[in-house]
Length: 107
Image (cartoon, rainbow, N blue to C red):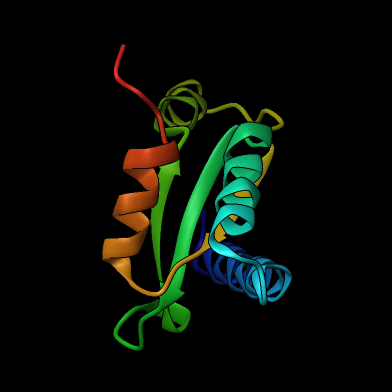
């Protein structure tokens, strides 16, 4: 991925995170949990996204689910369709917590 593609991808993640954050606004704790679970259940790969002025495009990003799928795509150097989910986070610690609750489980 070149710099232009990376910038576009990060902007898309930021937009998707803002959209998800807006959809979560006003949800009680149980409804917010179910909303996040749905994102994880429906996606092949899920990224946690939070504001971070020290990072490119002003956002921090962590892969919460789908590391193996991404690794396979990179190893084969072949594009394949993956459903991407984005979870808005307050900071990296919250992304790590979401990964532990909803992310890939060791086999």
